[in-house]
Image (cartoon, rainbow, N blue to C red; front, side):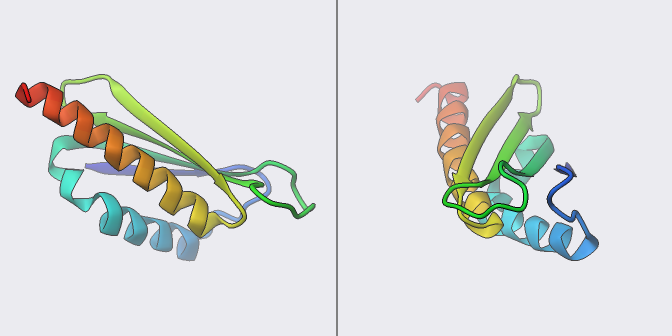
Length: 104
């Protein structure tokens, strides 16, 4: 499974941030990794240097093997909370999709 990490011009996509993001993904979505072929992470800051609530966005796109991609996004006040929110939403979508594949 491949994790592709992307940031916009306002977020410094350094190795430390990528390592933190990968650890959070492993923690929240690790049980799905054997079923995924790729997971894409998009981090962005909607209003650049200005602060404010819900200005950080995490969008996740998971590609289940032999299936269409599934996406989830979450806006929050910092990157970590945005990632957690997007992971929670994606986890719910993946559970639902996998249950449908199993016929439940």
